[in-house]
Amino acid sequence: MSSFIGEYVHLLRLALEGRPQEVVALARKNLRSLMKANPESAEAIKKLLSQYEEKSGIAVRDAKQQPVPIDVDSKLELLRRESIVFDQEPVWPETVNRELISVIEERKHENELMEMGLAPTRSILFVGPPGVGKTLAARWLSSHLERQLLTLDLAAVMSSFLGKTGNNIRAVLNYAQKTPSVLLLDEFDAIAKRRNDDSEVGELKRLVTVLLQAIDDWPANGVLIAATNHPDLLDPAVWRRFERVVRFPHPSSNEINTTIKSLMADLTKQGETLVEVLSTVLEGNSYAEVVRQINSIRRESVVQKKPLEIMMEELLARLILNAEREQKLAIAMKLLDTGLSQRRVSDITGVSRDTLRKYLSRKN
Ligand SMILES: Nc1ncnc2c1ncn2[C@@H]1O[C@H](COP(=O)(O)OP(=O)(O)OP(=O)(O)O)[C@@H](O)[C@H]1O
Ligand SMILES: [Mg+2]
Image (cartoon, rainbow, N blue to C red; front, side, top):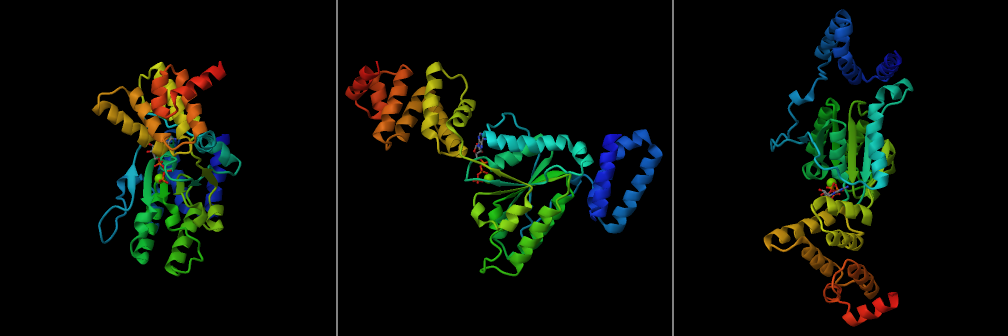
């Protein structure tokens, strides 16, 4: 009963705010269960909805049946559409994890929120340097929310004639708003530049206004995510629009450690310690860079038929080639702890065996 009242309140609010598409979507969502409980009313509602849709030309059905909007000239699809299943869960930094989980939890408690006159988060801004998992997080969210992911690469559409760009973006927003989905506007800064940018006036201004309006009015059954690695290019008016801002930091050495281990099966004890050392050395890099380095030595290991441990040692040697002497020494001490010989440690780090012995005797 209480969830019924919650939905009723929500429905009223949508109607009063003049959001008929969402009213229709909500009514359709409940139609199946109503069909069992009260077939007569369900039929009446179905008829009402069909009449409305016919009259208004608005159809709020399963968008899988609707063709994705295309660019008029190139005939290429404007959106990438994917349904994603993860076989391996990514490692999220704690702050990111908290935000992502709470978006999912809100959806699970949608009815309770509605009862309080609230709605789950609909618009999210992902901010962070390249390769820290913004796109991955959008994919992950869509998979956990069991929605298809629609991706619009704004940098790609912006390159064409601005008037046409505007039409394309409008078509995409329109399509996504009618679809229970997660829409990812990637490279968001490509369009949401400062509105006082005087090189592109008029059309660009209109475009930004359309986008801001879309963020404001995003339907409750969808999620809009915008991703940028140039947050400084965004107008404060744009920031304010988003209900949630998630900042993606570079991974910590612990997160790097877990990521590397997830890429390597059957590590020896020594291998594990090497991963630990590598993780501290790789700190400050993006996930993308870490994954790139590790996959590269995994390939080398197969091609050259050498154990992964050797490849890790060689990678380590390359990474610390130009490091400060102090850091080289610290790494050398950790490597000695893994059981590597003094000669090998000296080869990897460039610290002489004499120096190693001196430090070892001081330590003991
Ligand atoms: N949390 C994570 N755990 C494990 N791997 C990750 C994680 N985040 C990113 N990666 C790795 O880094 C790659 C790049 O990530 P992604 O494309 O999501 O970065 P991005 O933040 O969108 O970068 P850009 O700003 O360049 O678009 C992924 O394909 C994945 O291999
Ligand atoms: Mg990306």
